[in-house]
Image (cartoon, rainbow, N blue to C red; front, side, top):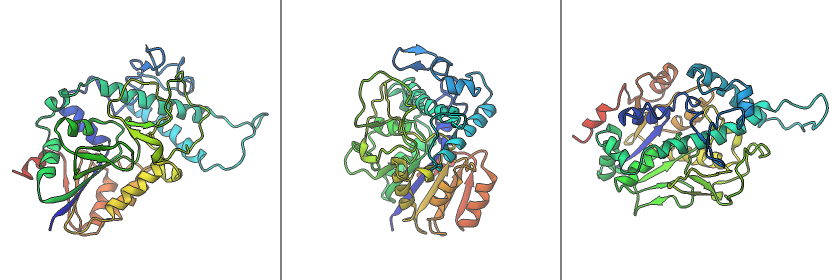
Length: 348
């Protein structure tokens, strides 16, 4: 019987890719603010996106390009925690007077999503097409995915990734591996793809259909959650340093459970549907998931859908202890690996 393979990928997967490609000095996906002074403001191409001039609310909250990663993550969590609560607040706002709410965290959220899209777009342009494959020719994850795609052992490969970057998609394109992006128009690459990529937290390649060349600005007036649905976006892997005004991104610590009417909620539901199909003959591989307290419900939704007989693997040099315990309690065929090199033996 042929197997279903499901990969669930977090930031650790991108970290592994960056380290394997020797790009650590250029690309930092751990401290998301460290390169902020280098990032260009899309309208003027002036360096310093993360500055008081362009992101006054983030700046006033203490965001700096030279801040330590732990401090950066704590501040980022504060911003997104406020946003998570904000979307539940149905009380009417008082526009004037002393009871007017303090919107600094909500405005900082708008600045953050715009900054993150521009940041990862900048990172994407640091490595040209062809160069990425050359740097990662012997990367175990690339070799494994290529072999799995070619093998008759697997009938389907579903990749649920919470990363905004498109390095994985670029590697597949560069290696002539067919795939499709779930639910987003224009997301078919190659004929009869075995691989489906699901991105519940969005992507820098998701472009809104109404995107215009208007003057670039932070969308402080946009509703949270947004009303955009998956049909409103198209996939474009030729990501320019553009003036993109609609950001299909859920920042780290964002809670898609509270945004079920948006595109992210639709894709999250789709991801849960894929894992529900996994049974004892199938394989679930989890790589680089933090299992942070703010996103546990989303991961739990995936893993509790699977059969207890599913062959389950965790790849992480520093696994979250709670996640290790949860996987041990859920799956009788659970195996932990502290690196991806063991994948080289799968099709030896």
